[in-house]
Image (cartoon, rainbow, N blue to C red; front, side, top):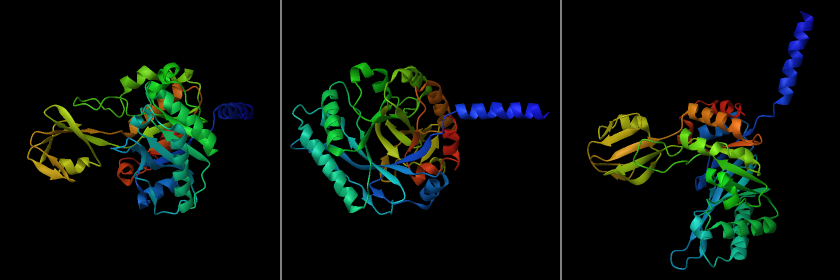
Length: 334
């Protein structure tokens, strides 16, 4: 019996040693004012979160001059000294489409603005992330920008990577960054049909096999947000965030037609939005089972295990849709 016990123990140890360490749990923070709610603080503590990816500002185009400008910079109203903060800069693709873009000037100004925010809030960052859904037409400008930014910033640099940029990387190229973050969401077109544009397993399947061939290390971003697709006369007229399904169910102005569709029975205003009689709302979200399924799919297809799983995004509205231990359940799949 004792000999058998030691054999079982040895087998367990060998299996345990062969399995890589679980990824760390991190979050994106995408609001313009950084102030944690009670539930947000609890989730950060309970999941031993050490790193936050904070959207610092967007870069868009000034309407008249078409010059790049920072949009809606973050304001810190919270002491974040116990976290490692990674500034995330979202660059609209139209910026990189500008034929006469001054890449050197844009890189310097972006770094300077990041430094200003850090200095004001006594933040010392070692990593910066660039978020841009570049295309074949904007590729050259984007790749040059990343090169200059990396050289001038003297920081570890990461970049968000979309599924199509993985599958067709020989055409879209790979930015010169230290690592990438695969955005495993927003897979389909936002449409009036019944499909979920945030995550669709059939769409994902078309890209998964490409992951093993992608030469850049990838960490993973998974979605925990939801939205309502506002449909009028079979056409999408907008996205409505922070819609509470239970409120819709209890609102006499709306009638639930299926698990995802609500019909407007009487014209009304809700959360500042006008809904016309016969409009439809399609609710798109991600369940706990969806998250675990996504993790299983990725675990089977990634070339290397991820070091981090970054959930998008930290918001008490999103958190209340899940059990508190969902994040541990998801990372345990890797």
